[in-house]
Length: 365
Image 1 (cartoon, one colour):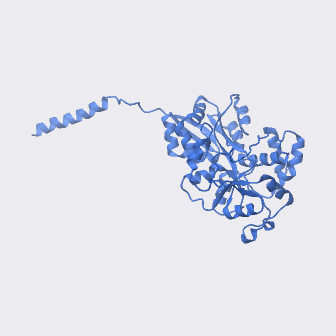
Image 2 (image 1 turned 60 degrees about the vertical axis):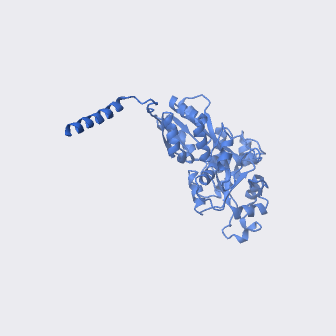
Image 3 (image 1 turned 45 degrees about the vertical axis):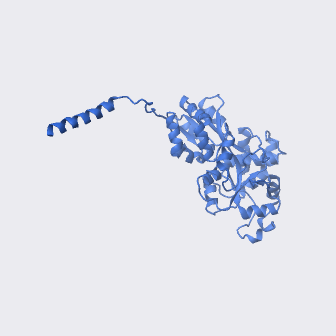
């Protein structure tokens, strides 16, 4: 009996060894290549998501990225010699990064996000009552923020107390202004300056000193009213969510959409689309072949596009993905920006944008 059991155990063991020696009929594990880069803070949650990591791993990539303000990326691009890519939140810093790395290829823009005004529903209704905002009558309930009326309020120093209906909301006090990030370090803050300068310059992109001179006073007012400014788009948005600070915040649509799509309560938050706004073109500057592979996957991989939309971005190659993702979610989003009649100006050339930012910070030459 003992001998029979011993033979049986040997056969079982041998069977296990034999199985281990038989090659798997499926594909073997993909060897991962680490891709190192810089990203804007608004994309940190996307790259930290396990599904995103798994999809990239299927394609042989593991991404390790440090998040930083888009306008500080060029400095880090100079200092770090082992980077495969940089992924700012707009096209504005791209040329400088390309110059530092000696690149001339046209970079890819896998996805984008319009910049919006975030507020609370009671504030939106006060703005609507005073012709600073409108609400369309579609099923989507899209809010529009009227930029000309806002700039008129900035120029005249209009206060919340001057608005009809504001007295019912004690938190609405002081001069009306929009909170942004610091334009010297953050892309969203710089894009706000670009947007205001375009409208102030008779809806023309500022391209000369005359344009800077014509816009600098209001740009400085719009910035000085804010006091200290944060360096990352995460910070003022989190303050707003915590009920701290100004009732109007300039933010990426993707930040709000990400909350809504994650199931996090957005309370009475309202997304208002400026009738003229800047689109944040998330642009990959690829320094290596692996960086280029990452850029191509973010643009062309169907599963990654689905995940991009789930994190609130609008994939360039599939504009409908965002609308499908946010359907039925709150707050209401514009499924189609063209149908919502949102206009998009061009961003000034970098040298003029830097001059406009300097003027906004009170450093005009």
